[in-house]
Image (tube, rainbow, N blue to C red; front, side, top):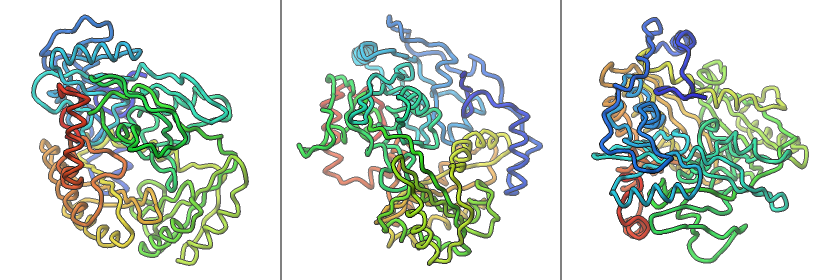
Length: 503
């Protein structure tokens, strides 16, 4: 597939986007669907000339298209700039290594030349994690050609996978009957290395929620040498080397491969929608379900507006989707007990399904965003996690801050832990044409300040990147920041790895 230089996925069909714009406006009252126009076709003239020549390495190029499609991630501020043809921060060079030797060659050349390196997987970052947002030259180190399943341990149920493998590539490379049970919304394009580097959240709404839970061992290349942890089911031998790389965002080393825990494909799957007339009752139901020890695979609560926009809700009821799955046994008993718990809070269960149709609409949502720039709609999502006792006050404060944008604000609880939820807030508002980035930045700052003030984390699963850096600095303990800087200095003495993230 040839990726679009501006949109999510391949080059969108203009007529299809106009239809999305029409339906979206009917549902929300936002935007001008009749004014939708496709962006200009890609032209090399959109990019600044490279500041450095191509090195004598076979995996490197300064091809304008290859540079353009690797300029940004997939945040709204990225989408709108690419839509308007602003590629000022395009990398000067792109490296597409096929193995670790070529990764090492690129890092050695970059260190010798003092050229910053921005590691990249699927480019789905929504926090500025893959953008060369700094002065001077840059090189994008794209791992997407290192995309193989190298080995499978059927006995221990684990697979050795290269960092550039996407979700579909991993599962297509596993033997029949095995599956990596990790399905983020970006599943189609995001990669194993990106998941680990950003501590991504995946399929399960409870229990094994993050990629952390599925990592058995990690291997990375740094300017100081190879970093590879021993493959173990668990260890108490000091601070975990894997934990240092999980969430490191390419600042400490370039992740090249990992052993991941895989599962048998579930054969028993049941999903039930449950309606609630009142949001507080729905939240209380999720609280009790999260503390029940049932650990549903899906426990996704949508407020009434979110349900109407994304799941065919009636706009008056919050909808909780409760799902269980197993490769070993029927899950009916777990479903029955879960429905008893939510029913005690006034939840009305709908018809159970053996499939998980919600997943299709979930992964299609990023394609809808392609219509926003052309129809004058601004969009932003803020996700966090907070303890149950603090959630009501945080929820009220975040929704109030978003309401200042005079648009439509929605909430869903994407993950649920015994000690707190991970709410996911979305704002859709009229865009100020020509000033969308400044408008987005103002909204992001306002809501992020509220999240920290109310006791939440600046991110539950979207990583820090460059957009969250000021808030991450406020969240982390000062002694830990000193330790992180020391690790950076030891592993990357030239400071070439993804400058501006974490440190």
